[in-house]
Amino acid sequence: MGSEGRGDRTTVGVVIRALNESALIGTCLEALSAQVGAFDVEVLVVDSGSTDATVEIARAHGARVLELPPADFDYSNTLNLGIEEVRGDLVVVLSAHAIPIGGDWLARTTRWFDDPRVAGVASRQVPWPDAPWMEVHRLGEQFGETTCTSADGHDVVFSNAASVIRRAAWREHRFLLPAAEDADWAERVVSEGWTIVYEAGVSVHHSHRESPRAQALRMIDINRVLDRDRTRRTLVRTVREAAGLIVRDTRTILALDGTTTGRKLSHIADLLRLAWYYVVDFSRTGSTAERRGAGSAS
Image (cartoon, rainbow, N blue to C red; front, top):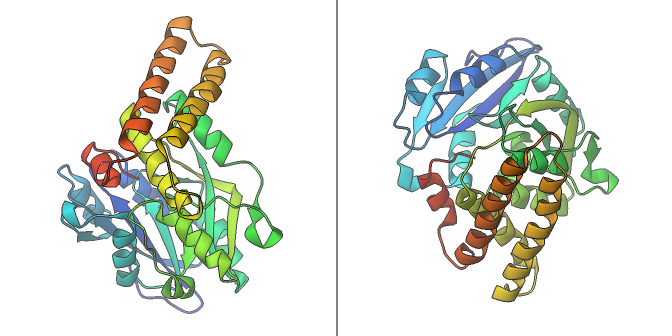
């Protein structure tokens, strides 16, 4: 990793966001090293204040590390700084706990950039075997089995947990928001005539084990982005969204096969806590910082 490009080899920059990721950062870097193809890969880990062995493990695997004070973290700032620091017309963006599955992940995601209109490609995300039911359900709904593009009129999912972006598109449209920066970026580049791709043929392992409040804060960050093009948010609307979540997901929990009644009741209790925090915290500011403070990474 990090060697100069040779001949017709493609130089690809990789920006990995990390906070206390010692459990998986090594696995992530090993998966990148195992990618097959004519690539020179330069890896930069942007660490925002890890107190475990994340930085040491990253350097031991040959990655450069950019260390940021925790107070300087937001998702856009981290990515913009990282992209400026790496070489390559294409830049891979990964969370440190998003692990590419198979040696063809990089080749299959970057092949789309033969089309000069493509600004970004996101891959499928599948949960870890020990993922909570809500993560399994969320990822199954959000990341389907069909590859699609915005050029075909599809509403394409785009997530910087595991994506590749074209540097030229990023130069025109840098990441802006402190959270949900990926959805915002994809929306803006598509509005300017670029294409976004969802590649379902390759995937990464990626899921979270979060408290109900951390899950609620993640939902709030996303919906704040969506609110920009809606009418003014009211408490009534937030309560209705929370109630809808309870009704929908309670049905899903009750339909779970092979799950005891006690476990289903525990899931429902967590769901009620999530809905409560969703309503209570929506009027607060700084949800991203609070989530990071709770130890959850992107």
